[in-house]
Image (cartoon, rainbow, N blue to C red; front, side, top):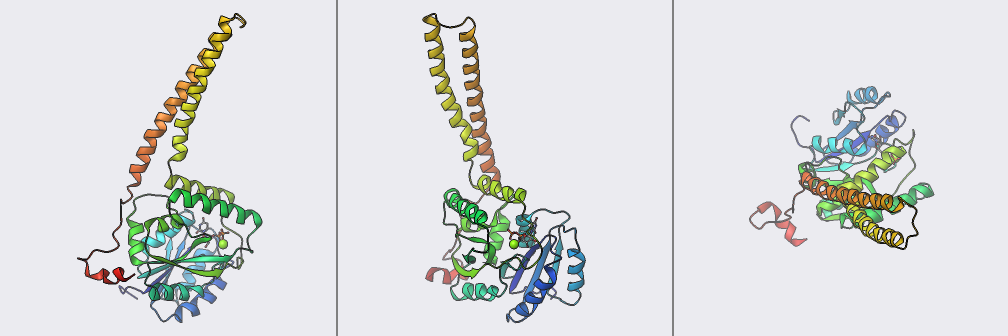
Length: 321
Ligand code: UDP
Ligand code: MG
């Protein structure tokens, strides 16, 4: 391969996938070889502790297009995809899970759609989730609803991390300085022209899920905090609300005192608790406002991305879209 740029990079994050690896390669190789484009299969080993690493090395000896990147420690699915995006050289980059839940056969369709419709992003969208449990389907639906709200753009429902993006998108994503990217949100947020390809999500071919509850919650928290400072601002509203409440409380306590019905010492105690509580909440809210500002400026997101400039020759087709 050398320095030559492949047409397609297929990025696969892998964590402890020794059970599925042989099946994955058996299905992937004939498929990629038959695509009719030059490719690299870029496996990002996310710090696997099982035989995955040695199996990958063995497979690479007679598969020149198989490229291996190993992370020093388990950094998580999204971080592994980040590493893949940084390393991938292809004109198009497909991300796909190792467990064959996303059928590799669909890659051909993703590629054809990107070329025929001249779009930068092609989402793989699950047309059927019956292989997932009720709980997973329900939490997933709630997640996508909330995310559409927060990102302020249509997040393709039931699209996870099986998708194709163009070089332009890869470069735009890599240029974002923020950490903890959630690809399924950041990519729609960028706003490149996109299309969808529907597919049926299969059962995991072998092994068990590598997404435990902790990792799922991490993804949910990252998703919210990457796009919204609303939880921080909550303190301000609580502080204001608490402040009003304590004013009412103070008036009430004084009224009771004046009618002479209070137990000695009660009024001063209540006053102290209410006033100090309100001041603390308000200060916390104020702190939240400043932290929110810091957070937003630390993300350094671009104010805009240019889709077309008439001075720039390479983008002529863009106008016809
Ligand atoms: N994965 C990873 N690092 C992790 C967890 C998962 O690279 O810390 C990979 C995993 O090997 C698989 C993909 O991410 O290729 C999706 O994980 P999994 O199939 O276990 O998630 P699920 O489909 O159950 O949500
Ligand atoms: Mg899976």
